[in-house]
Image (cartoon, rainbow, N blue to C red; front, side, top):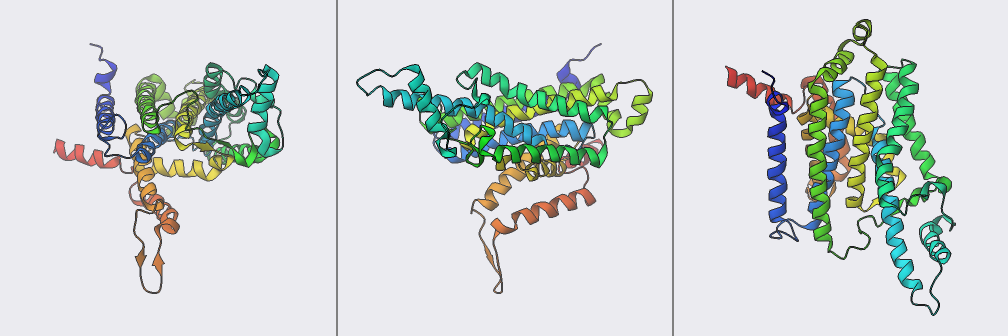
Length: 388
């Protein structure tokens, strides 16, 4: 008798139930639609955390299940943010410019409106003309398509070149990191077409929407929760069938899988491209809640942090990636946001803002040495106790 997908993967139902309950509780207690006990700023933090959990799932697919330590997936995350950010900034600026020009005696022409938008957006880099990369910025539908297409195509091209050359191990990790660094350095240039170091700002304001930020933050929170739930189901479906068995085989013994006749490079490329698209969707939801994106967000260290999250949570188990990303993100917010009190020692005062990254690095080392299954491995211990 064939079992359903949920029956074969009970953890999916558990995860979705916890996510639904969490979403309901935040909705009930948040500002805007709820009782007002959770401030809007923290709702945004929770929404961004859900997005980080989604990219952590992507990282777990490529690293935990396929064995490819990619140190470049935050580049796809950032590209997704840039793609949606272009429409948000263009449309918001268009409304402002149109309203300002409409106050004149003569109705503005379309060319005047476009010039006004260009001056507002690109004046900070000494230009007023729209670069080619902004050709679809006036269309929400096209920009939403580009959220997936641009990172997906980049991942497909990079993956095809790397995997066909059979680059593996640490060399592949270095290549992915080099790709991220090259992309970040390019975007720092003013002539990149994306405002250089200034990045895109004001993304938290939805064009044409008069609702307060308390309500807008809830919309993005709900969208982030929905994306995380769908992403978890997709990842669980991918790893539960024959495809999942093959990529785990590639992780454990790539030569043997190739000897059995499986096109290893094709499987790697499929996972690499899929996870790049998932990361881009997460970024497209993250940066409107952050309100700004610039090339510094795509620095290679961000992708290293992503690997640390997955390792701490427990790679090779999807819920472990979610736990690791949520735990580190929220604890990091607490330490770096000034909530953690400084500890005076007389001769020295411990300021957690300065020491948080050191603690994170030590945690990664300790988990790698003494708890390779991460926080998620605790569930294995609980299951063993139940069986005994």
